[in-house]
Length: 197
Image 1 (cartoon, rainbow, N blue to C red):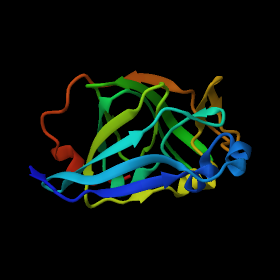
Image 2 (cartoon, rainbow, N blue to C red):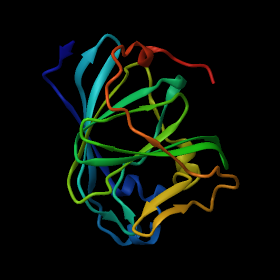
Image 3 (tube, rainbow, N blue to C red):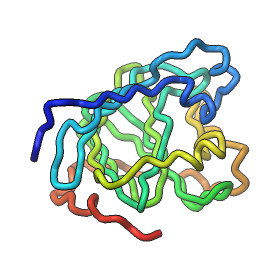
């Protein structure tokens, strides 16, 4: 494993997210601010890279603070691990207005979540403490945001009133809940494989 000395810092601003948030009216009235940070390329293992995302506690209007959400190109999977705090991962698969599958996974420090091929993932911080998560992903993939941007967000929003369905979607499966992994997979080679849809 190679540890890189130089870290690339990506900062996600509110202005980059307001189109995909539940409380869009709230977002339009706010001054721009940093929602979360991503430290990229901290480690390398073969064709994999390790990033760390830091999400502070707080609210985005009525919605719990979270990432913008994305999926990986070419069906590359991704492995997340919770370094500090608690998280909810909202993971969905579909085409445009129709969602074929959607699940939520609660995870705490020391637990892991694998995002399957062609699924979008959003990471939510539902607690009052900073959330730090690490992730292994292929260097050959890129982040795709288009479906979430076109549909004005994921098919569900996690708010102070619970889960609320995004009315832009015409067909959404019932939200199901799965458990996080207690141990990291021993072999991460599956993350280097591109899957056909």
